[in-house]
Image (tube, rainbow, N blue to C red; front, side):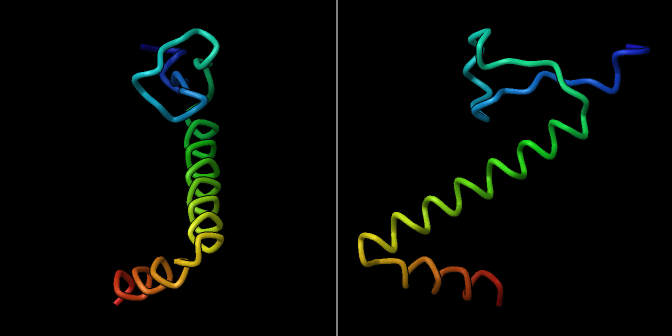
Length: 69
């Protein structure tokens, strides 16, 4: 691959099956990894907020404690 080996195709919405041109971009490997990390943290936060607003946030917290053990 030569000069291009440090680059990857990033799926902006993290859906690897969504290959629409507007969802794809060429980025450096480090940038792609950072994007995935940030995006997953945001998704996790939104799930927690949604569960809390539904009054079941305590179940997610309990699952975290069990997983950490």
